[in-house]
Length: 122
Image (tube, rainbow, N blue to C red; front, side, top):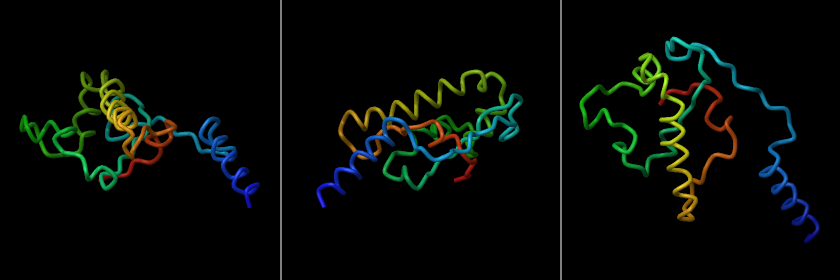
């Protein structure tokens, strides 16, 4: 039994460090959400973030700029598209890193594919 536990533990460490040994579909750049430039697909599970304040991400609730999907502005506006990568990575990864540092559940995604596969709508 302890050998089985050790093998499962070692396999888990391997997957965390090196990723899955199984073939993984790579995300393809395309004109998602009407973007003027090809971008990677993005998925976001609102249900997984229900404990967070909506205002942390949805500035449009405060500044009254609209109530649509983030992508409707951040991808279709060429000025916002130029800073999209930085904005989202700072916002998303920063929050996940903060939670991990505080030893809270919801640490950072371990791979780009965690967010960049599919284009699930809320």
